[in-house]
Image 1 (spheres, rainbow over the protein chains, first blue to last red):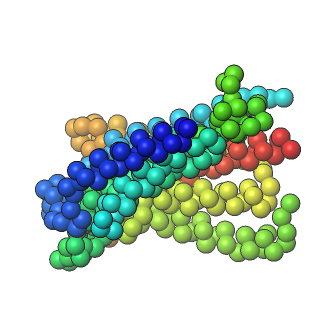
Image 2: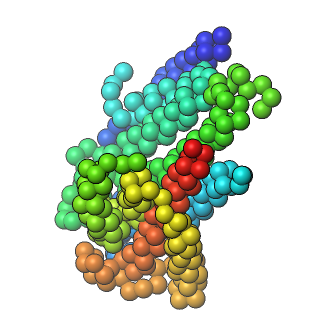
Image 3: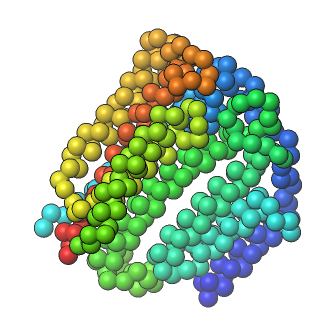
Length: 85
Length: 109
Length: 136
């Protein structure tokens, strides 16, 4: 019963998404990508643009990601090492 | 339906959502979460693709793909690993206490 | 627990894995790679050692490494306030693009994150393996 209801809900959701999808595959780059490709090397000095975005432009993402990793380790160690028998 | 990365990514997200909603085994719910993350990665990386583009490492005058979705998906992969590890450890503790992984048997949770 | 074949193969493979992880981390601003990818390679190397040679009581050193990585990362960000004007500013000279010393603070941030991720994944594997071993 639950599986049938879930299947119907997901089917309706899929039909709604695919009937309204206007995204083109392989079109031109956006304005932010042009900015990164033109100015990225001269502004950061790194050739690899993914690394320059990760560690220079959007470094707050990386800060939050390390915090998430720390919280995951903290949670796992609290759950598994809590009961010393 | 055209088989490109965007459509297959959305299809994977919908399949994972069905697995999370309809299945009763805890491992299958976690597998649904992993499938959703994989579809999300495929979807965003396909959004940044440009025709005949190469990886965004600047050398000469090539056409480069969008570097921003690659970076965001790098973040997503690490978050997915953290979430999956926490979910698996919780499943381990649930199995130790109740001796079952079926979520309909867990009445006094 | 493990056979002689697995131990010998692990002895051969482990130095190359550590070298490859360090290469991925240090060349993160020139080639595909970076702190997270190389850190995960080093962490899986620790998992291989744990699974083949048994568990040693080395987890407290890994937690020290993780703290060092996080503190170096935050120290780079905070020294950006004093030297560059805002948090995480790129205050070191950029250098010529394409060489190993370029990119300002990007290689330092990659090394700090690589250390933190490698130690973090090693701790994660260690906790689960130690729990399973303690239960048996």
